[in-house]
Image (cartoon, rainbow, N blue to C red):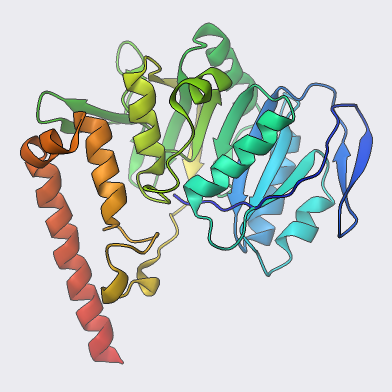
Length: 309
């Protein structure tokens, strides 16, 4: 999952009904709610209509929030379109920022504004009007957890993943376990209190710019005593993920940020899961096997694409 943002340095007050101008372009930032302790961090790139619809659905929630739209150099008018909506702050990170970097820039901006609870969301998900209030109720009951809702995909229900035993056998769950805790869940909707960022840091944008960014972060949080808790009293529906296969090249197969074979991301995930690189190299044979399978499939795809040209 990938999201993009940009740096924008401008002062924002927490006063109700305050309109501020973003320097340089005169785009108004409108505050129309009184309680902004919750920030929605939503990265986007050239998804104007989807992002505008998402912003409007968030503004219709039962809980007042400030929305940080993290744009990565959109050229389709996304920024100007969302700027006319209330409770928006546009955070601009540049075209080089992928999911982890974009989310980090949004978190930094929200923390500077005094926000204490962060809801990282994709803009291409469907959700009900009570999503925010239900997740916050779960957070109040379990303040030292990452909170994630039940998720529906084309494949069915998904709540999270467990990694069991010394070999970290992967078990994807359709229902929340008895204690409600998983090792990781999908990063398309994660409520994260500031205490977790204070303790484990932010998403690893250097090593996990896109894939594994959400997973690696949750594994670090789990190790520090902050598990991911499933709130199955509310659900979201994921739309199909962005496919970057058309941008794959043999020369950058292990370095392209959107590649399923990004080598630094794979190693960082393994280190977070097994504790160090050596244990991952020895005990992670199943993961290595799957990595090689993806490599073979990708090479076949590239060969077919070359033959058609």
